[in-house]
Every structure is written in structure tokens, then in C-alpha cells.
Length: 399
Image 1: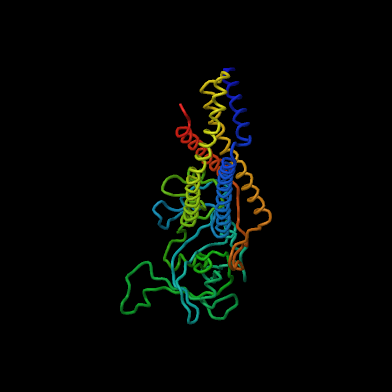
Image 2: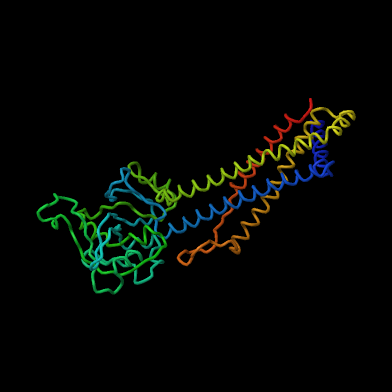
């Protein structure tokens, strides 16, 4: 055990001296520097690219948190349901939400919209009231209803707080047959006035959403007084909710509520990462060439070491360790540079987003370092270094 440890430490010492010693020709020295630089640059770009995608993911989550609850409770079949039989843990605020599609009209303007029927509990679960650009987040009651519009809906309909022309909601009757003789009888309508306008910089919400009293929407849809599309809760532990409410329901967190947006980000992130890995593999040939030249250069030295009593295993360890030092040096330089760039971007935002950022909430690329990404990048670089070592060893080592 002690002999093996001494042999490894000796091999590491000699490999270290070989790696940092002056090379016999300038070409080998230049190629070694190029290989280390290439590994360092690719490592740095990997760290920065993954951190940028992490930053955009965090930014997207923060945006969704302004219009989505922490968790949603929906029926397992996706249909509207009566939540009166649900048993929720104590201390959880659960706001009922009823959702449907409708036509909204104001004067001569009309457009399809998404109606969300809510009550007074909703602003306690979703901080939509913090993003009002006019009026208050107040939807009234079925008898005296008000509407809160997305800023895009208000602009397209020509509606707003204090306007004299009412907003008209048109829905098809949920029950009964469509009348071809008097088609207007197949629809229900209701006039209401705008009490608030919000802007969350999300196209689907700003351009399509109208909040109305849930009692009014139940009345228009001919529902019972308890029917909902989902319950919006402020409880982050979906496992506790699942155990409390039992089967037949599904719990959706923010990621599951907006799967398409996160799926696009995830696909872009890993496609970029795989492209960088492909570039790294192309650099493999440069690393192999460098290692091969180093092995050939040290043949005379290895013969001297063998004559002094070094074992063939020790010689092999020296050559392998020298190749690992090449990859490890590039890795350390790249990781250090990448982490410093990400930290400086997070602190000062020196790399700005291109184009017109006046409508965005950020003007610089968001970044977020994650230990898992650093470990992944390190593992990939070390794996490529190990493969390079094996290939170079087989091609250039004399037996």
C-alpha cells in the first residue's frame, strides 16, 4: 500500500515537472498552449451559456409568479369540478377560479378573450394587484359586476377605467340547443364596466385575459354555486396537498402550469450545450496531437527512468498524468474565467440585450450559477481528457 502510494506520488511529481518544463521544440510548446487555451475557452463558454439559460429560466419563473399561483388543484380529467368535498390542510389559502373562452365587445370593437372568474381571495394567492396600471383589482359581484382587463385587451377594445361605454361579454349557452332561427337566443350576454387594467409583460395574459366575478361566470354558464376550473393555492408542498386531497385530482406547480415555455428553454439550453460538446470533440484531435508529441519527446527520458529502476507501470502513469494535467489546466482556467464573467454580469450587467428593451423588465442578460452545471462541465472536460489520453497512448506509446 505504501509502495503504491509512493510510486503514484513519484509519477505525479515527474509528470508535473515534464508538463511545465521547456519543450525540446517551439512547435510542441505552441501546440500545448493552443490545446490548453482551446479547452479553457470551451469550458468558459459552457459555464457562461448554461448560466445565461439558467438566468432566463429564473426570470421566466419570476414572471409567471406574477400571474400564476404557487400550485393549482385541478380534477384528474381536466373538467370543471365541485371542490366542496376536498379536504385541504389547515392554513392554506385556496382561491376558486373558473375559466372559459368568450367574446368581448366594446362599441364597434370585438375580440376573443379568456375569462377568469375569481373572488376576493385571488389577489392573496396571485400578486396580480401589484401590476395594475390603472384602477383597482375589484371585480364586484354578480349583481354589480366589474372587469379587470389586460392592457392589450383594453387597447384593442378601446376600453378602460371610467369609460362610459360598457364592456359586453358574450358566451354560448352551455345547456340547450342552438337556435338557427333566432341565433341570438343561443348566447348569453352581460354588460359590465372596467374597474382596473393590469400589465404583467406576458402576451397571453396582457392580450387575452379578463377577470370577472366568479359568481357572474357561474351564472352565465348555468353552474352550481361551487363549480371551479381549478383552485389556486399558496402552498408550495404539492406532496402534502396530494396526500390530503386524495386520488382523482392533480397538483400543478408553476413549471407544470406552463410546460411549453419551460420546454422551449430546456431544449435550447441542451442543444447549445451539445453543440459546445461537439466543438470540444473537434478539439480532441488537437489534444491528441499534443499528447502524442509529448510522449514521443519523452521517450529518451523514459528509457533513462527504466534503467534507474522505474517500472513500466510507473512510466505509463507519468504519461497519463501529464495528459490529464493538460485537460485539468484548461479546465481550471476556463472554470475560473467563466465563473468570474458570470459573477460580474450578475453584479453589473455589462452584457446588454440587443434591440429595443423599453418594453422589457430587464436590459441585460440574466445569469445564475448552478453547482450542478459546473460539475457537469468539469465531468465532460475530464472525460474528453481521459479519452484523449487513451487514444494518444495507443497511437504513440512504444511497447
